Length: 104
Image 1 (cartoon, rainbow, N blue to C red):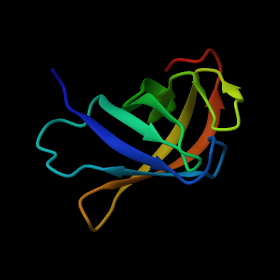
Image 2: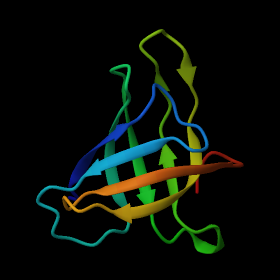
Image 3: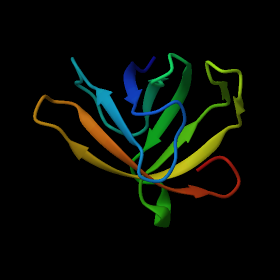
Image 4: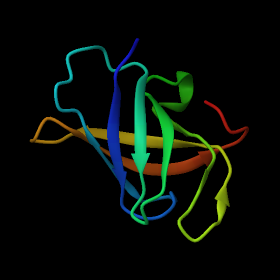
């Protein structure tokens, strides 16, 4: 069974330019794919999967459907991302464009 890591979004939802910080404390395995518990700034929570080699599209973040704290339902979406390792051993994702079809 793979480990799931905590990730923290900069807002209550994702959009181009938003940031997601991934806490990879204790990480010892391969990066592909990486399961995430995605915490949003409003306290809502969902699951996501980071795919670093999503074919010709580059890295992608597949985010499951969730409900924001204010009650808005956000459908499953897949986003392109750029990923950079941080000095603390984590990773920061910058959200790019939304991909068609929901899953990478």
